[in-house]
Length: 118
Image (tube, rainbow, N blue to C red):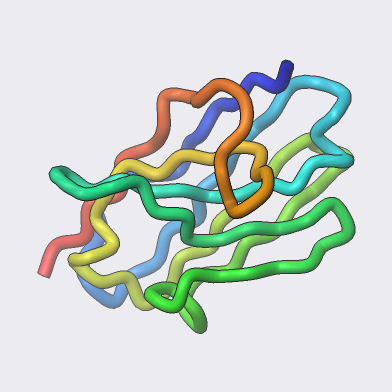
């Protein structure tokens, strides 16, 4: 079982940047595809970025070109660099292992709040 702890969120003005981190416990981290999800108030959970165990990346169209996902298997950590933030990026951000069709696997962490002011 992988336990997840997200951090790095905060309040930022539109156009600003934040870097989120997700520290994972468990021996299967290095062989797992990982993803960042977000949930805005009143909206469904959205998968914004994924990275496979060998470093292949995919992004939702809404964040492509602005967000970068990366991982450090030596630290069991996955990151999300968010640039050119927009008010519509405001959400609670979570990381998780990613399964088929982008579905999350395992338990959720507490998430980290990102608020972008206009």
